[in-house]
Length: 145
Image (cartoon, rainbow, N blue to C red; front, side, top):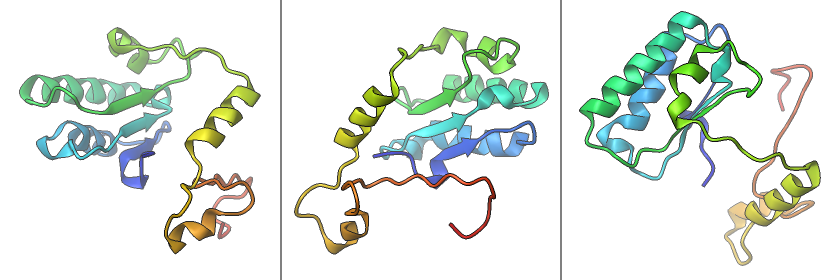
């Protein structure tokens, strides 16, 4: 399953240490092995102080935890060379291949389809392309979408 709202933190320069620490604790705590995928999106945008705290909390919890198969992803812009997060987590770095828009769309259509014969809850997703995930983009946030 895709990560839910409590598993994702979208970072900005205003993201605080507490928010980052909470997500890291959720990802690396003993109760976190319930198939959740914790994600930091745009971690390259974190200010230096918060980036240092992320590194500190992550490595401290990894060393003190008995969990070896945690699910914690940090997404950064590959072009953000001056980000401390990229430097601190370089050993864990995975580069994704460049994919065309068509390849991404084809993959998502096959992976995110509503299974046939599902309960009425899935009926809300049946139009127009049988997708079970929808994205809403807006120039004006908070307008009731």
